[in-house]
Length: 168
Image (cartoon, rainbow, N blue to C red):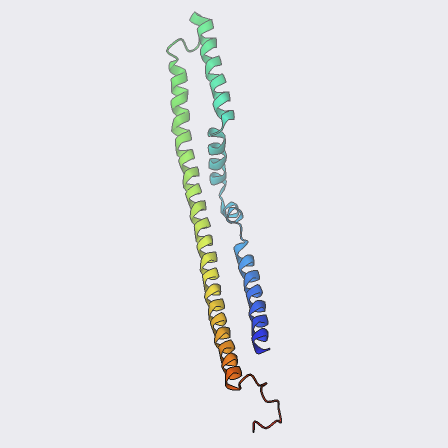
């Protein structure tokens, strides 16, 4: 009976510790990061998201082909004839602005990954502590059960004396 009582107590403590771990582990790193994001960081993320999408590639391709086609069709009246020097200038300016913005977004992604790994480490450390505590309690329970088995062997299988009974 003592062993069963101990198992019941260990089970209750185990479930309580599991609830605590779930509560602490339920923090969403994305929400933490979004809460702390500055206006510039949000813009950098949106530019990187759009700049790395098929929508951007397709629309940019359409604009470039249209620009070149219109300037070829207009020939002598074109505002940017064939070597498209003005277009090259615009593309260079776009690249000089877009590259650092994308790098800022990548740095922010590194920060997100670092925060996620720190939260995972905290959860793993708490779980390890709880597992060690449960292992100690299980070892204690095993020792107590062995003690009860030894008492049963010593008494030769007789029931233990009740309160008020003599052992003689």
